[in-house]
Length: 220
Ligand SMILES: [Zn+2]
Image (cartoon, rainbow, N blue to C red; front, top):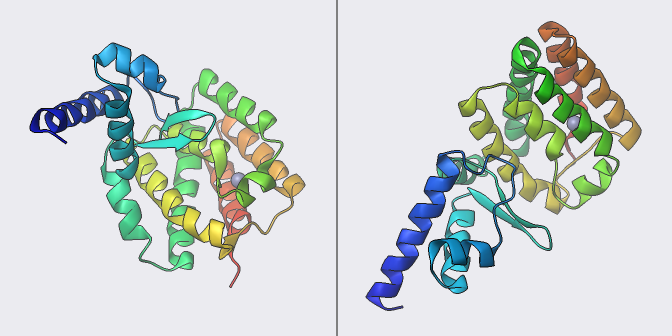
């Protein structure tokens, strides 16, 4: 790569990173296509591809083959944190994840607005293939990411994203898997949704706690 080329690549990474941290593309949203970004930034598609790869390595973006590229984190910290977390046991990871889920559920019940609750309801209703998604290493899914977003606590959401990223390796290897049927899982999610919609933090925390004990467990 020429000096000019590498400078252009670094500048492209900086601009995409600024679009993510500024909230232009919120967490879990899909960014524009490679061709659209190339046209907008006035660089070649290969420069965009390279920049997306760098940001994916940092844990900020995640390419989903055939579906586009999604924002996973607003800062590079969660990528570094995921590597750090991955050096710990699956049971330690699951215990910290449970603590974050319980706190997120209570905070969401305290403060979620009607629009956020409707988004969570929509995620719940479209979540017909949860067991399949666990098998494909995508757990714990859109419902949980949305719930954590609804805590309104950015730090909690970033820590959670890092843990999920670290746990994915365990799910793909079968070391971590669900102890629930799709029906049981849906029942738990419905109860969580109801507690949050009712604005009941104690009930939301209790459901989140029992759900976290079952939806992902260490299988070894
Ligand atoms: Zn769940």
